[in-house]
Image 1 (cartoon, rainbow, N blue to C red):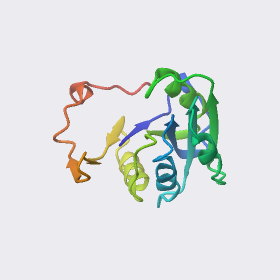
Image 2: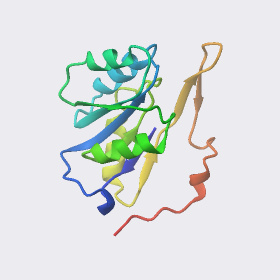
Image 3: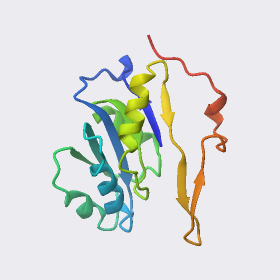
Length: 165
């Protein structure tokens, strides 16, 4: 659950809300509704949700468009660029209006206070460039498992990030 500070001159934009959340989807019909609803049901309400259809072949597009919420923006791509593809992220960043961006997957569920906790932390710590929380997942046996940030072995964990001036 990463929340990035997104006020770079490279992506100069007028900030209309605090957080832009991305959910790209491709043939995720089993999970998409839960993912969307988990974002829409956040205790923190100052966000936009950008749903990017990257050429889904199931009824995900219809599921996504069934939500009538002014915070949702729909983008249809003609090709499937793969999960986490640079083209999807680029399209998201071109359209994002938030001060912060949150990348989220169509098969994930967000705790109701996730955005509130992440934004509160970022606002109290302007020297930070990004923040992420602990991860929970359901294993192949249906058992809920947790991974704390201390257990993660992300390559960027040991990389120094500098804010653009």
